[in-house]
Length: 215
Ligand code: 4NP
Image 1 (tube, helix red, strand yellow):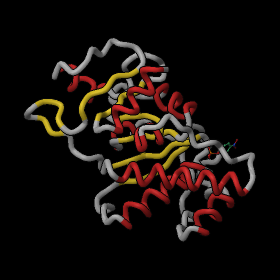
Image 2 (cartoon, protein in one colour):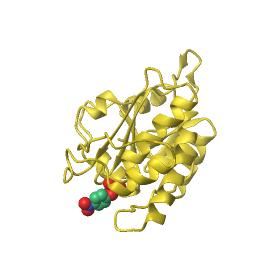
Image 3 (spheres, helix red, strand yellow):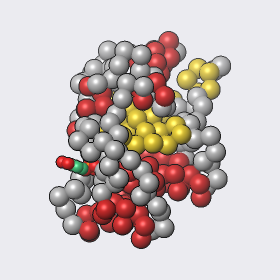
């Protein structure tokens, strides 16, 4: 676990953190291959590893991220909020043009449904309309389409890694880990109170503002 926290810190200090919940280096094979080719690290150290974000070799500049998929269990509480809040932050910062932002669930129990009314309500209280989103399940194509696939909690991150197809190119990890350099999870508010939804909103807002700096 120590190396994981170091990895998140390294990401926040201008380094990319590549995480593998299965404890080997498979979460982001493409970037890992680049870094290995540059001699930045051994890919076979278990747990985590880092490589500089901006320059991985004198001639190879890393581009900002241009797409993000937010993932939780049901895609009706946390990840629809993350989709709506991050889109709002990117629009406010005038960075949203050409950026793809979406959300999905690791399970498909609520496919086709609108977000939970409590998520719609808390977003609405903060001036964000997420009522037209519709729930969908994480799909193989997402691993090719998106630069980033971000889980709200460790269980989401593990589920994202476990179903990764062989042709994946997306970097996957914990939302707060990648956005803020902190190993914090967004607690599931589904069985909670309105206050829990407000807390989820505030955590997602802070992480979204951090993430926007990487775009
Ligand atoms: P979410 O919350 O993962 O933030 O969308 C949940 C939504 C539904 C269920 C669990 C969590 N459920 O058990 O149906």
